[in-house]
Length: 280
Image (tube, rainbow, N blue to C red):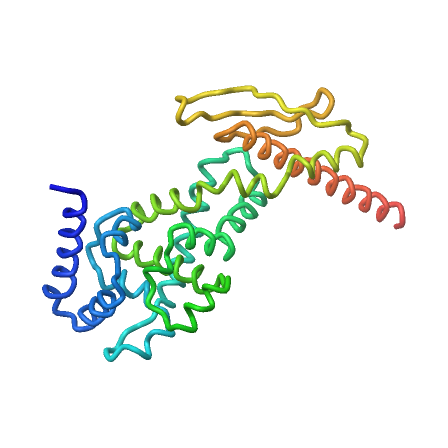
């Protein structure tokens, strides 16, 4: 049996399952609208990465509020799912970063998470997976996406995560987030160049030029982990562990910066305390 025929059969099955078998008139209406738009049911399932159990919640995720005016039944837009998806996404990214970077301080973990889940990144990834082709939205809303607006795509990305969580649980969402968000971790770390910031700080405070040493390599070839230490002079100031030397160096620099800035703030606080005691 050819691949094309298999895809056609799967598409017919989805239409039968979601439209004719379903007794929910709202589901029937959505499926009708999707068929009119030549919706790729198989492609949508492949995008999710699993076979959905409760389709209505996933359909809700693709309904933008601008499209409600075209529906006759009492439908809900994806806004509530966006709220839920935002919380689930933040939790999963925080969980994964906590496990990935055991040496990273809380402040840098928070900054890294915020950079991975900001609207620009979410919209960028929504465009990468071509999420807009699956959305039900008005012509004006579609036009705003075409002119580069991020909000609709970022919101839909979060709504999809919320729907996947309700339908498939944390496991399927975790895999989705790993594929489409956490793969950007190294890029985000590089964009936020801790190595350059550490070099500038070190030179401004006459600490010399930082140098980086790989202290450990472990794991199979397809999943290597590198541990790097950064030194100023003969003293180690930070350690980083990552999937590449570049990522590990960035994390080591972030660790060193955190330590240096903390020590600097502590020194300033102590000097203020001494000055206050002398003034008494």
